[in-house]
Length: 331
Image (tube, rainbow, N blue to C red; front, side, top):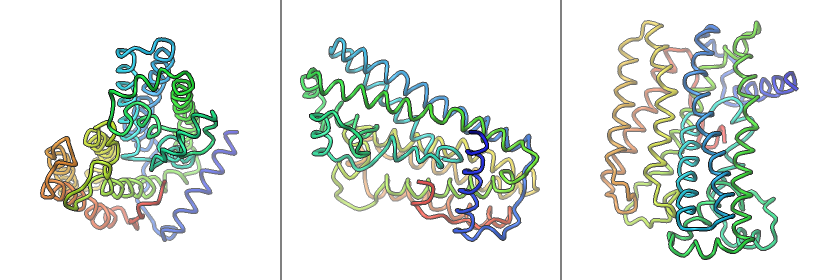
């Protein structure tokens, strides 16, 4: 099984590198200790936070269905928010197994198709990706931003059972990556340097892809409706956005460290300053994004563009990488 996963992952990385024109690059090659430390400090903790939150969500939904009280419903919502934000943090800097397994499509399918979801509840069949995952759960817990109406609906046994089933599936899907993450870490320490040779190009390109997805979450047009923002039903759009920024920042620290190690201290400082500007500017956008100003959202978007541009050009040049995936890469 390990050999199969290794071969599959190597083929996937080779494919995306060829597609991006990276096969001829001679990138900076990190050693084993640095490579594994990056995964240990920036990737495995985020995966652990996601699996722990998903387990708690599954348990809370089970307890709620047994005793559907307002307090129990609030507990389920709490753990949904924790799980969703933990997932957003993972998506802030995706890599390796979660990309290979296409985890986002399994637990974060968008947009929510309400009619399909309601039909699936009646039939009990959630084989359609559009009728399961965190966005579908958000609809069952909050409705169309109508939280007070959902308790009565969720007292219907089939509806609550469906909610619990989705929570269980999210937990199961996240745990399916437990072993692949361990294998990925081991491969970074293997005698064959393939994974280390492609570590920086793969991870930085996926960081760039995540920055592209942040743009979709922070539209800059005027007179936007609440439903034009992700997680609008739960009112958590801004918190989810900042969770993704936090995940991105955690992974980016190793890039800054690598720049310093290679004698590019000035560039490392510029990247750190760009990241700090993203955090400050985007955090200052009002939590109700639909009521925030175009100016505030545009400033956040511009800060992300500045960071993304520096990574693509200056950091890519420093590490001798060709960078610039599209928003769909790594999905």
